[in-house]
Image (cartoon, rainbow, N blue to C red; front, side, top):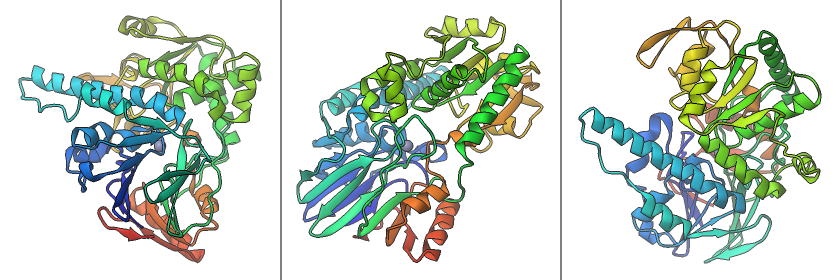
Length: 447
Ligand SMILES: [Zn+2]
């Protein structure tokens, strides 16, 4: 058996790997490229989608599922195997991608430019939904010459790492591995020793600080701002990060570590994800399940509101603090958070809390570096609000966790990371006596 990366090779996004054995072609993930690599999304896959026999998906993030509709548009006619939470979350993510593509084309048309046709549309989504098939963790399944098993990766509800066997050879594809020290999701399962491990290295160069310290800092920032009647703005990803922040606000309220204030989630996409969570409660940590079992919602602080319409969203700008607004998008490249920041940044008693990755040169990075003014909506905005960064909320395993997880492996192909981070992790693995190397796009690796 051999595996060939056709995405997330020496870069973070676009996860897509082809496994071949005895004329059977199995695709692991079919994700979109994001950020600087986005223009690669419509390039040829590097293989013929008509010749793929089956697709297995590790989890519902866009960089692991985002090119599935294009795969169908280009001729794939097989099944797509997913866990139950992935099946429920996937439509929310892909419909949002489609909406963003449509809005971008509309903007171009308004500027008098010719907009290229959409690479895929609602018809491809409908076709995809009909091809999804649910699989459960821990059960051994057969696909052509392969036997496979999904285990819990602890990164999203229903996230999996995939173990594949054929002719006495075994391969594991890590997908994305979760951050073991947080409380909402289960801890990642440990892998068996295999012939080849294909592992992510998003945080290959650094470990996260202990999560308790992050939580304490979060409470300190909230107390400081809320006691000054300020507003706290938390740009956040709609899937998982928003719900996790709600979980910890609720927990801090319970402990009376912060005051109870109005909390607004201003993201229609986050609202849709939050509605899915109670349906997949079995996929969360025992702590979350325990709260559910008492008839309570673990993701609901006392004064939580989900805003829906644009009018409701704008009305938040006129409200006085103390209050907390969680809004998308998490990378500050668009979405409702921008309107809140335009109104809120000039006030010295407000604060911005960054809990996720910010692209180079973006608004988030400018705020983190203490910019005194920023350009937004064609105007200059004074920045008097303070910006705090809480990296400990990361959804990925840190370097120490990756090294621990890979402890029993002998041969590791690294994917899903920037080159310097993968090189740093590869070096650490080689020092521990393992064969570790960076996977390359289009280059087959024999298992
Ligand atoms: Zn992910």
